[in-house]
Length: 192
Image (cartoon, rainbow, N blue to C red; front, top):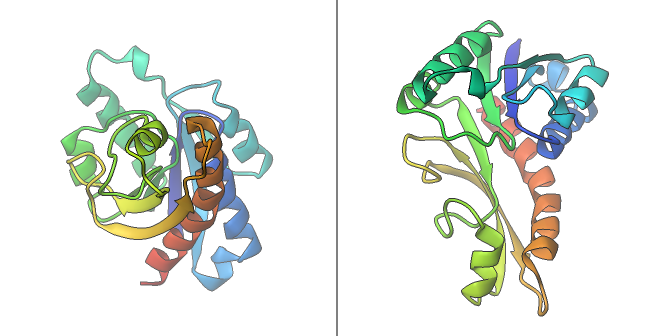
């Protein structure tokens, strides 16, 4: 069985979309894969409640309890590795990962970013797209590399920027597409 470990920091809507897709498409039977664990750097992350309700193992590891980013990432790797992951999926995990962490999971570490990469890496993507006068925005599933938001692109979804859009209204439309393309990209990678 190919184990998927999902990392979250908050509500976990992308994680929930992945879990639902895995259930509805019976990934255990069709892909030999399952969501084995959901891990958060915040013990009160709402997404952990959803994962528990689905019978998925959950763990929390507070980054504030570590002297350095390297120390946290080393402990996080130990925790994740107990689940023997085929894939480590970042789903709203609000931590920049160290090069050692990224190297450890090279080729197995995925992220979703709320822009059409390579445009608008980093934060505040929706407002930046509006401010730049973009006619389209979107989301990108990509493999994680040591350089932020520049790994190989696996899937993208395009969303129009509408007259009168705010960062919040655009973000809401992009998020609905994230929930579609993230599970699809994971399933495609598992089939490869």
